Length: 448
Ligand code: HEM
Image 1 (tube, rainbow, N blue to C red):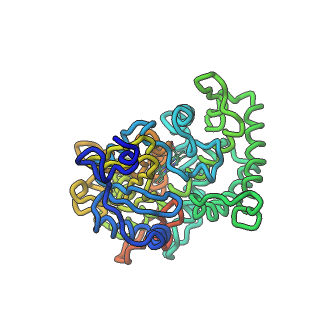
Image 2 (image 1 turned 30 degrees about the vertical axis):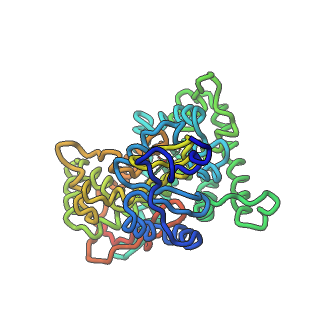
Image 3 (image 1 turned 90 degrees about the horizontal axis):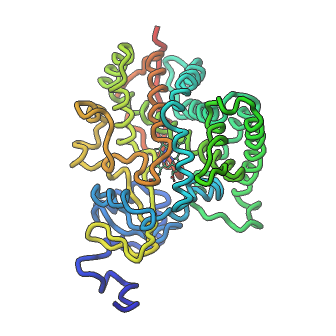
């Protein structure tokens, strides 16, 4: 085969291998639709072209968007050599030592250090922290008055992740509580925007990110120094202690610079997404009196199966993260009957998978019972992919489910949520997470 043929597989490569259908509108139009009306545009493109198509969008360039379950399985099970990290990625925001920016063996090694921190016995230690934070935050909820749940949920999940990572509360956590929310607000829309050259940064929104970063590094360096000097480090249950004790394959500790980037990663990735998922759950429950009544009955009887099913269903029907991506790093990557050329971005569209009527009958309906029953409550990949899939699947997935479960349980034990026929809240895209546009409003009354 000639070089030209290699470079243009659509025309002359292996028979039966084609490029996916391409969105034909001008690049600028595609870009604007992707940036500002992403869900609607994706839905329209899927309607027109099917569950695999190609778009040309800002920052990611030529990108294949896929939501056919069999093809998504191929993406999730591809080797780390064939499909590498998407560019740009959240490493932009969290620094070069963040797991979000890594690839290959470096990525595998880092995950080996991080993943155990969010599983099993370590998770168990934080049940009480989550319950305490929920009780503290909800102590002054107004009765009989509509309010947004998103901000209270954000405060709960931020406090939980800070205490989970750093352990005991103190003045440093107080400072972090002050500086992280404004950072998240500015950072999310810039998450995938390439940073401008250093000398122009102080005239752009990146200046605020740089100021935040200086403050974060200072505070976290103090916390690391305290932890490293703690004679009780080996008994501590927090994630910082776990990471300080952890050793890589070559028996060395994670470099200090990487540790700070990673702690920022976990603080930021680990709270607003969960808060948005909780706000969506309240938004759904307000409109589903039967499910809510069953959940109340279950909580009073000490059960949890329907509550967990409700969490899975809420994450299905209102995906907080809509898309995850990879980049082809092989001369040709075969995706079903399609051939995807080197260096192309592949975007998996989670919400379209979750709306597939062949897998989820009446997908628009909020029906937690679809995750109850003989097979247990755990939904299966690749049909349900709220946390992504394969080698880069979300590290905090189990932590999130456990946290949502305890927050919901605590709220249901203490409050009655009023139900009504309010119109569904629309989705608003913050740059990474999709949130309920009105903040997941509810009216509650305290249970006697
Ligand atoms: C509702 C809550 C959450 C959702 C919907 C969510 C979703 C996701 C998704 C879709 C990915 C990309 C997966 C992929 O590329 O295959 C991801 C990655 C990641 N998430 Fe989450 N996440 C949530 C909560 C959390 C929490 C609580 C933490 C940590 C405490 C966390 C830490 C991470 C990290 C570190 C990665 C990068 C993994 C890697 O690149 O190897 N996330 N998450």
